[in-house]
Image (cartoon, rainbow over all chains, first blue to last red; front, side, top):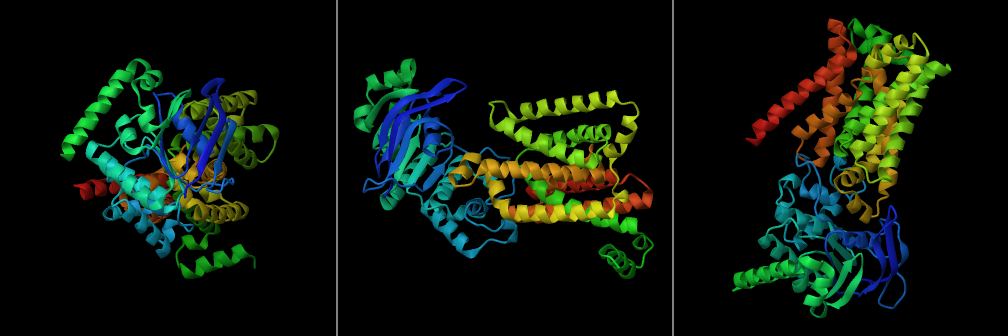
Length: 255
Length: 283
């Protein structure tokens, strides 16, 4: 079972400006929690705080099922990789980078290759093992990034805008994979997203940020017109329309 | 007989050619072998981290390091290496603590160190004549102590690359992702920058400060054209760097051309060939 995350009076300042201001919330164990908000709301900053990558004021603690403090095992899926597409690296190489201690130029070690293939199998991407990462589509690359996150057997999976550069078919495949993996692995999952369709279909709980905490609770209770107005301001209508359109498209394609 | 005496004897016996009878040629050959292999390995990460401009700044900072050494009466190679390391670590430090882009931070350091160097040279007349050998380098004049230091640096560099190759590749792809896997990403970057600064300092001895970045970039760039995996990338870069070094040294001795220039020309030729092969392969 994944850890619960307790955040108390969290403030992050950059050059004197508050990116997150006195945020207190909880991320319960074993659920999918989405962090939503407009650009610059501090969503990715909160993810970096959880990953302990940046300095902050306040308290962030992780607790196990018995209430004791634990150190989580992170799995992290970034928005994308910013790399030179000509880099000669296969998807299998990419998965081995954090797993294998010895350098890849001294050969791939069998037991790590097995772990990498297990992760690829989980995301239905075994056939991509020998492909160059620079030649993968957005959706394929996201599945490889998910496989890399899963290869370290995490109990806390963090995803930063995981489907932002992916087409609708790729998005559906990715989200279905996430759902099926979570059913089996039972880890805590945190998704940063501005895609309300993804959030309403796949998240159990929502944290709405706009530098401060606007609301938090179950997805059904929180995704109300009033809360969306408070989070997204003038753009809330457009976001709701986009959300409804995408949901209609999804329902139509399912029929 | 000392170790170098044995090496000269070994070459003289195994290779029955005129060049193998000259101690300075053997030293230059060994120097170029160890240096190009090290540059081949380090160059992969220079390209991976997009640090060509960083490397250029380090090499140009050497100009100021040498000028400082000459002005203060200290061995210029020592001030060159120390100044290069300070500049390298300084760039990484400032880059990590500002919102400015890497290019901007590196550009600020580049222009500042060059300006300091020119100011020092203008203080002491005749200093610019001493600086010319650092501009173009000369591996043929390498002495036994320098060669020993170069071999030690090679061993250190290869151990570092052995321990960090996978990690540095991942940091270059996505630093936050590497951090989430428990890697101390700032520490790796500082160590790499410091080591690279020393490698650049030694590279200046061989090919001069104007061309040392090319010695790092060209074999690694050619290797990208040839390799199909992260493992073979390393071997291609090492082989192409080594062959460029030996071919450059040989042509320099044959046609009496500056060694640094002929090594880089050989590496450029390999880059051209590898680019053509890549186009053919892609089509």
